[in-house]
Every structure is written in C-alpha cells, then in structure tokens.
Amino acid sequence: MKFYVNDYPFEIYAKEKATQINQKDIVLGAASADQVMHYYDLVQNGKVKGKTAFVFVVSNYKKVVSEVKESFKIIEAAGGIASKDGNLLLIHRLGKWDLPKGKMEKGESPEETAVREVEEECGVKVTLGDKIGESWHTYIHKKKNVLKCTHWYKMDCVEDSALKPQEEEGIDKVVWMSKEEAEKEIVNDSYASIVDIFLKYKSAL
Image 1 (cartoon, rainbow, N blue to C red):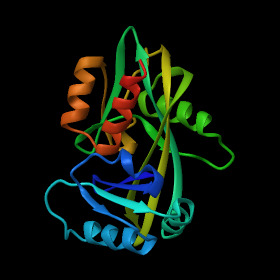
Image 2 (image 1 turned 180 degrees about the vertical axis):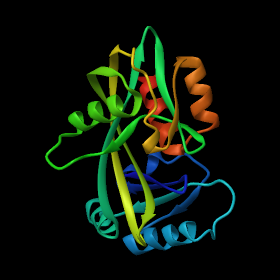
Image 3 (image 1 turned 60 degrees about the vertical axis):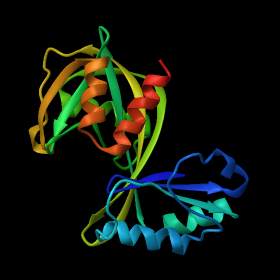
C-alpha cells in the first residue's frame, strides 16, 4: 500500500516483497501499524524536513494495512484524465495544476462518480475508458484524520463547447494541454499523488 502524507510517500511492503525496495529512503523493518502512525504524526505535525519516503516492511501485511486504515476515516472519490485530439484536460485549483475528481455520493459506483465529477468540474461530456489505478492521500478535516482513496479512469471527451471551470469548487482554469505540456505542469506544480497517477497513465499508453 502506498499513500501520501503532505506529499511524503508512505509505503507498506510485505516482507517477502522487500526485494522490490531499491530507494534510498527511510526503511523500517518488522514494522507495526503503531510505527506507521508514529511517523504519520511526525510528518503531519511538521517534524520532518527535506524530501524522503517512508518504507515499512511488515511480516503481516493484511493486518498492518487494516490497522492503519482503522486509524482514519476512509473517504472514496473518483476522477479521470480526459483526452481529445491528443490533448489532455487539466484544471487549476487552489494554486496548483490538478486533475478533475470528487467524492463518491451514496449509491454511486466509482465509474459513475468519475464521469459525473469530470463533467461537473469542467463543463464537458465524456465517455469512460479503462481504469488507470488508485491514489491514496491523507488530510485533516474537522480535527479528524482522513484517508482518501481516489479511483482514476481514462476518458474520451465527446463535447466541450461549454468548457468552464466549476468555480464553487475552487477551480479557476480548465485547460486543454498537449501530453508534453501537461506532464511538465503536473510534475513541476501538482501533488505527488497526482504525479504518480499521471505517470501511470503515461506508461500505459
């Protein structure tokens, strides 16, 4: 499992998969859920400086992941990377380039949420494609720890004559960009979880 805390990556590995770790990061062996949450608190409280990743190697992967998730309120969301004529649709929200997404409503599937949110936030009509993957990140809401899982999908835009940012959601721009320009903007000025999803999308093309 991989999730982000204030753009710091936290990765939990089963012991038998520890050979996949090839980064020069902070690695903790025989880790517990309590240790994961200890480092979460350090990062959340601004006690960690510089760029690093936290890698936890665990002997009981399912147990540790379950216990970590129990420390958070889990929220599910969905969004997508929409394309048209070789260009990709980006939004600019709260000072950063981002991809359209939003929380799942009661009774919705991830696929339904993804289409609805992209259409609402950008003023377009899209058709759903293959799933890209999931991203996880944490934040604080009403003094509670939240772990948000976002499901991401490829999409094709079929109508954009009403292209318009959903300003009430803090979006000030909706822009079509070439794949090269979109990658540059996201890598240089977006959230780490968004960078991960974009690079996963790119690698599957």
